[in-house]
Image (cartoon, rainbow, N blue to C red; front, side, top):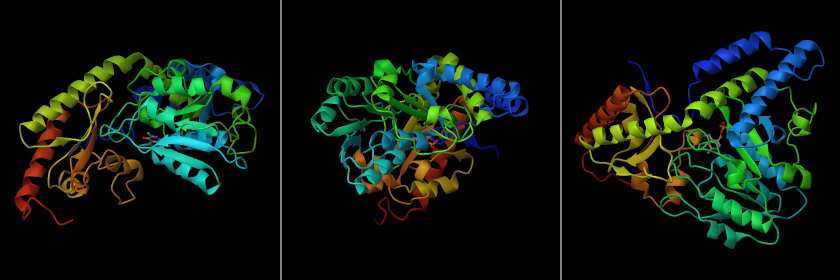
Length: 388
Ligand code: PMP
């Protein structure tokens, strides 16, 4: 039985245009783009072309784009690059950030810095007013994600950007989940640092983007995490992953063309899925489905169900319980806890994300399979309430 893949927040399949570009690049542009010979220069030109495509996607200048290995590295570099060791400084972030932001911030506290983690409302949102109230004279950085990987909440980053701009504090935005569905313009958002990964936008794994505004770079250059050959203008040493960069460029080109219409189609698939499901089994939404939430995703709970058990039953669909990025940790999702869900509702929660290659038939079949598994589990359970 073919798997219906509905875990597009965890990763996306590579677009055929990406595979084609990477295959060509691996064969024809294998030379080191730092090498001064003709083959190296050709590879360099391709890398720079991809950098230009990425810059255009987010409204940045080409010189403001740095390639990393992914959002985890980008988030580490953005945060540790600004908050230097030795100075005791303050950082503001939110309770629903990805672990690559939260744990990076936590690592700063061990080095003597202070971190304020802002709570969110039941939709998973922070306000610009909360950020304004948290700023201190020694605040070195604010880090707020564009959209949440578990409950799809889009944060008011532009409003927060207006606050941080006025205060002269750099703003970092982890745009990993948002950039595939939302228009992103670094100047409209008012961010100085922005990060994302190739593999969430139908590009390759192991490649990511860090945007650093020229304004910030001129005022206080970031401290690199990796030292070595001076690649990426000294900010990220290590031979550039040419094929992955070129693949990312191809992914970005497809995205720029399709994002708006794709968002509408995927919101339609989600509607179809939810109405098919509602005909068969009751559920509670843990994420919003209107404006202010990602169009392609939904998080829901089945009362009394154990989502992990359910997924063992539903072998034909790939979905996730909580964040797949840290699914090795068997603790309840920090995001679902932060929005105030009970342990019982968290236990029954499933995250579903539709993608570029999902069909209507798959959306319908997924609803049917899930509903069947829920019904089966309800028959098997001795009572609706399960031991805590
Ligand atoms: N930030 C967010 C919001 C994410 O969803 C993820 C991946 N799940 C990351 C950062 C980390 O990305 P990567 O694993 O590609 O480094």
